Length: 245
Image (cartoon, rainbow, N blue to C red; front, side, top):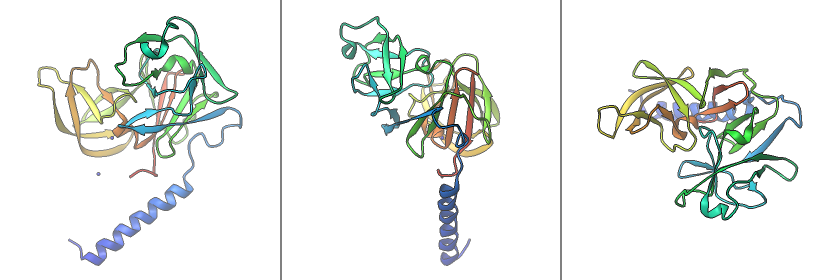
């Protein structure tokens, strides 16, 4: 989702790095003062610019589980599910906390064993901290302090400005891209656009035109922000993370 003498340039670069370093040390996250016991942290790793949950288990089984913020229902790969295709399952966040869901079973062609969707989180909120590699399950819901808030009806959406035009884009962590726009009558291709989100000017970046029904903002942009989705209040909160350039 960026003419001076050489000495001046070096000093300037070091100053920027110094600011980023101290910002990373002193940053206060929006939900930092939530009461103990009201949040659970779940580690994720990024592979191919997708978010996998290696510490989570489903019915006690480890696997390749993707986080899918735009998925209304959790899906399980047919081969992973085996004969258990229509029963309630549990996503275990840790030894004490588990969340029940009834998945859809499809052939995922080896992409993952499951995509964890919105139904798992119910009416609660999750925050995605790309800089720390943590998803925080927040029982008290969203903490809007310092954040830009967007309302949504179906999938989580944010208002993004593309070449001066504001559009609503789905927050899609199963997209490893920057921004995907419906191609309309144009050929499927990559192009450039000037993009702004949550008061942050992302500059002119590479985006994709594709066969999608709605714009979708992916992890290459989302990773610049702390992302909170409150599925109960139907709100998305974005906070420009000073720990990322």
